[in-house]
Image 1 (tube, one colour):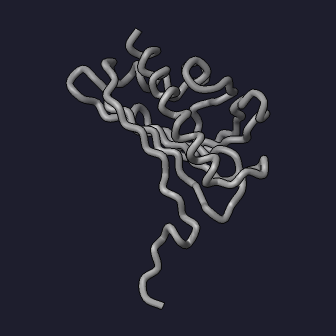
Image 2 (image 1 turned 90 degrees about the vertical axis):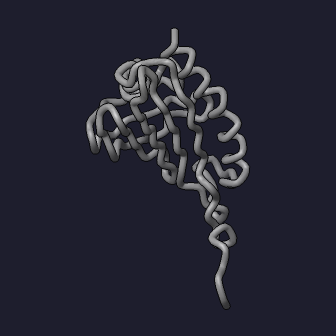
Length: 144
């Protein structure tokens, strides 16, 4: 058999977006780890920054997606499960007066479909493009 490429076993590479924001880490944290902040740049929600807390992201025509906070480490990391397959992680690193922000969207599987019956591979490409605009919305919000 030999070595089998992980990609051929169904794993699809995570989406990763990193940018340096001209804002202090606490301002960025407040934007990515509060219900109000997440609503401004991402989606309406009923998030609470409590490990194990179940909440919903309001995905408009796709309905309300169930989520659960898995890691809360202020002001460095927030992770939560999104729907049945995905994990979203926001990582923050304090630099000299700025903040490096990394978004990681993982849980992709070539052999799986979303709750809406769409193949992960198709949705991943759409989401990868969508995250470009989302992180720019975050930049505008925290740098205002």
